Image (tube, rainbow, N blue to C red; front, top):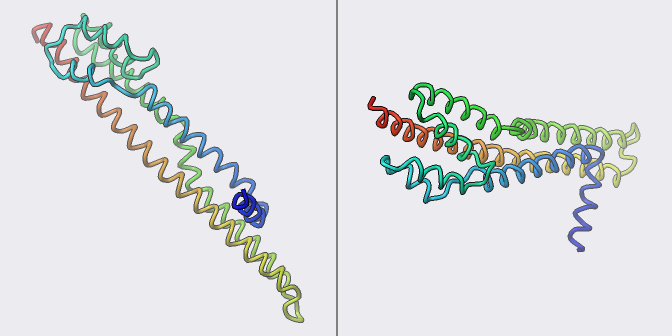
Length: 209
């Protein structure tokens, strides 16, 4: 509790820029938490279903049954259902519909990632503004007669350092989050494309192409 109290006091020394930096920190945390829950709940594929698609010679009825066991909002279920529901159409038609659905899914996965990317840039800049404000405050206390208030100068320097440190910390966390979820998005879409190719190949075999 004492450590928490001291941390809050330290943040207060950071000046007015701590407020927008705190807002950015909350936004970054909320977005990363949302993304983590999204991938955990809606972008996972059971090993049983994965193994079935990899066999090539599966029965469509088995695929439908196992796909129905996924969460109704699962992205792989949505993607597979487009192919399953159009499997009696020409393969090129089914492939086109699957590509459209994959594009919609990719857009959903990338939603709000731009905010994280913006925070990566904005947080250090806000920290720099806090640094400038702190240093200006410190210099104002140095008059023509020399140092007027040594304690005030120290406080201004502290404000500058704290704002910079907080801004850089938020930017680093956001950068790691942005890169991680961008990579996870790419892996998910690559897996979806690979499995979609398996299903389209199955359709072509069924149609004797």
